[in-house]
Structures are given as structure tokens and as C-alpha cells.
Image 1: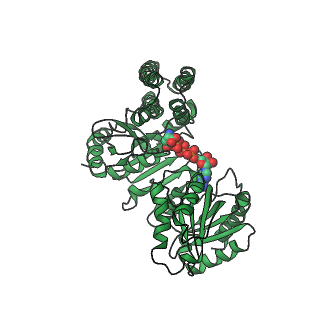
Image 2: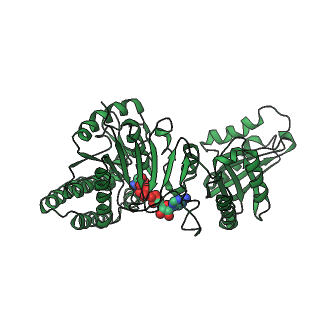
Image 3: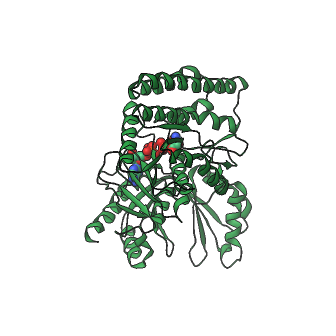
Length: 459
Ligand SMILES: Nc1ncnc2c1ncn2[C@@H]1O[C@H](COP(=O)(O)OP(=O)(O)O)[C@@H](O)[C@H]1O
Ligand SMILES: N[C@@H](CC(=O)OP(=O)(O)O)C(=O)O
């Protein structure tokens, strides 16, 4: 059985800073219900709480006052957002029981002197659990029937790395429908913890940083929702980081392919898997801010203009091997990448000219020296030089780049900017990456952003 007209509404930590964030979220849910939609809510932890909990598990000294400060934030949000006396008493009791559990877990970690990955995941999940309990109470206080569920209780099953577990789609689909559809059919709004899932045996696991977006789209898929709305503190995905580039505008339409590239680049801190669950479905994604009259719609169609956004990635290095020994030798690229694989280093990009005289690997900066040393040691017989250069990547994303006419124009423009070390565009790809001097990154981003926005007017 499938409930119809379902919308999954996810509220990010950026909005849930204090009581007013929960009140705004409840008003949004009421507005959706008035339009006849059946709503499933996903919440993140209050702003900054996940970071603080991670820090507490890693450095538990002084943990007690730090946990009390978090506790006070949730209590104070409850006092400000839950109007009904009865609901307030109930939710303060519920929050206090959750804090009791959290205090015991952190105390145990402090006594033992270390946390297992599962214990760490369980502790960090409390940011979302407390938030979900609070949101359900705020909704009830506004006359909206609601219950909250942990990710596992809602049916999201995941295995593997407790920090970034892999979701089992088929078991989860069945479980989510079984758990949530009866509530939806009875007009009860389920409030589900984002970011949190559980193993088949019931151990808590997490879905990776920013994972609430992913929880929302997973639920959207499993419940065959019409729409997943990701509510945040900006009115949509923007043409650049608005904190750095003031002229950034909201992008009205994105295709799933474009949105996926942006999420993988870390734009708007979207979880890299955000769009994966819905890419082959009719569920559309809307990213907006409560009360805004602008939004970004992401679906299978996308739309103009051809170039959409610029994203800066810091924290990378180019590791380049050169030497005549590389030329014409079959299997050299495999040897070079094999050294990285053996060290467990992920390669972000590979560049090699047709003459085979050099191979550049792009990796996270923290791995560059280790990789360079290993390459010199293991491939010294074919490689004459190994160089490491710090860089930033300034990427332009847009389906229009798949057309050589548009990508070549952008290559020409980028090549004319000082500070660009190299440009990478793979045929048919909706992303063009320029590797630049780190200190030039934002100046170059600004110029490429002008290029992106200028074609919005000219089409
Ligand atoms: N291209 C972009 N589009 C929109 N927001 C961006 C972009 N790049 C960076 N941001 C920043 O991301 C912030 C929202 O991300 P995040 O705090 O993770 O939201 P949430 O908590 O709602 O998931 C915005 O406040 C904005 O400043
Ligand atoms: N609270 C988690 C999950 C999340 O998605 O949060 P947000 O929606 O605030 O980005 C994190 O900070 O990673």
C-alpha cells in the first residue's frame, strides 16, 4: 500500500538554531497540510550540535559542562516553541530521558578511555534524536498529530562503516513502507531523525556528514513521494557560495546530473549521495528556505541556462610524475595509480598528455607527501621526478558543458586568467575543472562566476 500525495520535508540544522526555527518548521508543515499534502518530516540536529558531540567523543575532557550546554539549548528551544503546557511537560521529560542515556554513554567512553566506532555513532546520533523529539512536540502543540522515530525505527537499515554506512535499499524500502505508511494514512506526521540509521541487529550507524539530506531522499524514494523539500537558510542552491561571492543567485532548475556534481563538490554541504535515491524516480527535489518565493527544483529534466554554478575546492594537491621511462610503456598508469591504491589514497582526477611524458594525480592535500614519497621509492626506475604542488580547484558545472562549443569557450576564458595551472574537461561531462594557485582561487572563481551569470542574460 502506498500513501498518495506524500511530501518529505527536511529541516536542516541551519534553520534549527533555536525555538524560532522549530516554530517556522511547524508553520511550514501546517501550510503543506493545508494544501492537502501528507507530510513526513526529517530533522537534523540543532546547528553546531553534531560538531560539538563529535568533539566531545574525541576529546572527552570537560564533557559534563559541555553536554549541559547542549541540554540547555534543547530545553530552551522547547520552552520557547512548545506552547501547550501538557506537551511541554511531556517533552521536557522525554528530552531529560534522552540526555540521561547520552550522559551514561559519554561517561562510559571517558571511563574506558576510548570509544568504539559504534559507540561514537550512537553518541553523535543524539543531536538528531533530541531534535526529532522536540519537533514532534512542537507539531502536536500546534494541533498536528505527530510521533518521532529514529532512523532505524523508521526502517532505514544500513551496514558497514558505522560513520558512513551503506543503506540496504531493498530491506529498507519494505521496512520504511511498513512503519510509515500506516501513520501517513492516519494523518499522523512521522518525524524521522536524519543522518541516523541502524544495522539489522539494531546497532546505531550514521550516513556520513550532511546525511539528513540523504535520509530525506531515501524516504522520498521508498514512499514514492511527489516531492522532497530540503528547507535550509538560503532560498536554494546558488550559482556560488553566497558567503564568498555576493552576486550569487538562486538557480531555478537543475538536472539530477548537475545536482549530483554539485553535491559531490560539496556545494551547500549537500551529502554526496543526496540525489542517488531519486535519480530513476518521478520524485522531484526542491531546495528552499521557509517563506521564500524562490527555490531550486531538481528533476530529470533540468533546464536552461547551460552553465549553472562555480564551486571552489581547497585542500587539494597535484602530484606529478615525469620521465622518459613513462613513454610507450604499457601498464605505467596502472603502476602509478596502484601505488595510491595500496596506500588507500583516493585519486580525485588523473591527467596525462598524449605523449605520456607525465602523469598528474589530484589528491587531498593531506595525502600528497606520503604519495609522492611512495611513488619515488616504488617507481624510481621509470620516473625521473616527482613533484607536489598545492592547488585549489575552481569547477564550473552545467549540462551545457557537454557541448564542445560551450566547453571550449569556457576553456578559452579560463586559460586567459592568471594563476590557472591546468584545465580538465572530459568529453560529455557537465563539469570543467581549473586547478589554480590557492591564493588566486576566489579571484578566479569570481571571474568564472561572472561568465556563468552573464550567459543567464544572453541565454
Ligand atoms: N552554492 C551554494 N548554494 C547555496 N548555499 C551555499 C552554497 N555554497 C555554500 N553555501 C552555504 O551553505 C549553507 C547551508 O548549508 P548547511 O548549513 O549544510 O545547510 P543545512 O543545515 O540546512 O543542511 C548556506 O547558509 C550557504 O551559506
Ligand atoms: N547533523 C548532521 C546531519 C546533517 O545533515 O545536518 P545538516 O542538515 O544541518 O547539514 C551533520 O551535521 O552532519
